[in-house]
Image 1 (cartoon, rainbow, N blue to C red):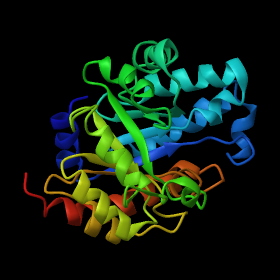
Image 2: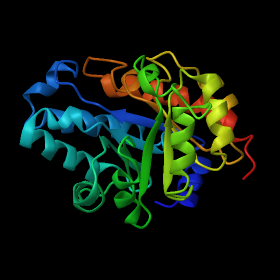
Image 3: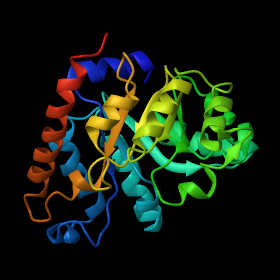
Length: 271
């Protein structure tokens, strides 16, 4: 999916919501556990209930890899089931180099028809550029995260600027805003504004809204640009909004609630 196609979906759906598909067999409704593939059945119902309100889905691969071959099959079925008008992010956080990165890229861009994959930049350009060789595919680079451990490295001073700022500045040399996004945590409102100054035209994938305490209002205030420039992710707050047989209805209500708020912001952008 190209940048303009993604922007088109945001305009059409009046939403910049990304839903994280992180199925945990200890949390999904118990009636699904008797199914042949409970993970896929859970995801299928969530997708059916929410796809009109979101523009992206983000399966975190750890929640599938933990279950071995069956989990990987569930992931493949899930990705193939997601409607074609939705942006698909493999939240895999890969970060190796050379041929290894090339094969990771093939995994998520050829074997699995994903639009984007999350990548850790610690090993530099060698760990990122192989993913950028695929046309109309995206790298979503970990830049400023919302976890407490972010202070271990991301906020260290490097040549009189924070390390996360240095990473973003350097990464702009590797890929344009047509193929590269940045992960920017929602609980870092003031820093989001700083990142937007560094990368005015780039999309941000913003986790942390909802269950992790991030404010959608602040994310939009500090992080949006004149074409929105945001994919705001919610995982637990939507997919686990209910845990009974009507869980998909509960998820739909929560997704609609967020989308309705987003619609008020979307109408302000200069398209």
